Image (cartoon, rainbow, N blue to C red; front, side, top):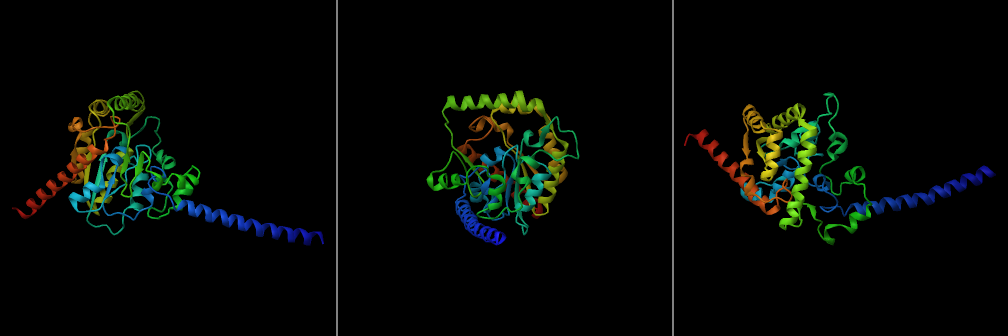
Length: 325
C-alpha cells in the first residue's frame, strides 16, 4: 500500500515538474529569439546565412572593413568574419571555423585577409607544437558547429553567460549598444571622439602593446602555417587578397620594432601563393583611430573604399594582361 502511494505521489510530482520544465524551455526559447547585434560582440557571426565573400582578421578588421562599402563598389555581398585577436587569430581553429562559415557552393568568391603582427603571434610560453592554441578554449570558434541558425540556441547555450532576460531587455529595439554587431559582421563602435578621450585610450593601448604583448609574444610559425593553409583553401574558391591594416603612427612604431620583417614575410607569402598583398601601413597618419589601434568608423569608410579600389585596379590589370590590350 505504501509503495503504491509513493509511486502515485512520484508520478504526480513528475507530471507537475514536467509542466514547469516545459514552461522554462518555452520561456528561454522566446527570450533567445530576441538575440541580435546587441546581444554580444559575436552572436551575429553565427546567425546569418553562409557567405560567398568574406573578410577575416582580428578586431582591427572587424571595425575597419565595412561590407556595405565593399558591396557598393564591387557589387558583391560580403560578410565580415573577423572577431578579435584573442578569439580569431590565424590558426587551425580559424581555418576549421571558416570551412563551416563559408557557403560550400562558393566558386568565385572574394576573400580579404586582414593582417597585423598580433594576429600571427602567440605567447612565448607556448612551446609544445602538439598542444592546441589558446583559442581552442577561449573562442566560440572552438566550440561551435552551426554558423547559420537564427535564433542560434547552440551559441547562446555554449557562449552566452549572462541572464537571458538581458537578451530581451537589451535588444536592438531598446537602443543600439556602443558596440553593435551588424548582420554583415561589421562591428560598429561609438565612443567619445574628443581629443582628450582619444589620447587617453591610445596611451593605455600603447602601454599594453609595448610593455605587455610585445614582451610576452612572438610571431608564430604555427600561425603562419595555418595562415597559408587558409590561403590555399580559399584560393580553390576564389581570389585572395592580403591587407595590412595600420594603427596610429605611434602604434606602428611599436609594431615595426616588434616585427621589423613583417611586411617582407607577407610579401613572401603573397608571392608563394600568387595572391595580392595591399600594405596600408605607410598611410597610418591618413586615418582617425578610436584608441590608436582601431579605426574610427568614418575612417573605416574611406579605408574600405581604398581596399575596393585597389581590388578593382588589380583586377583590371589582370584582365589587360590576359587579353593583351
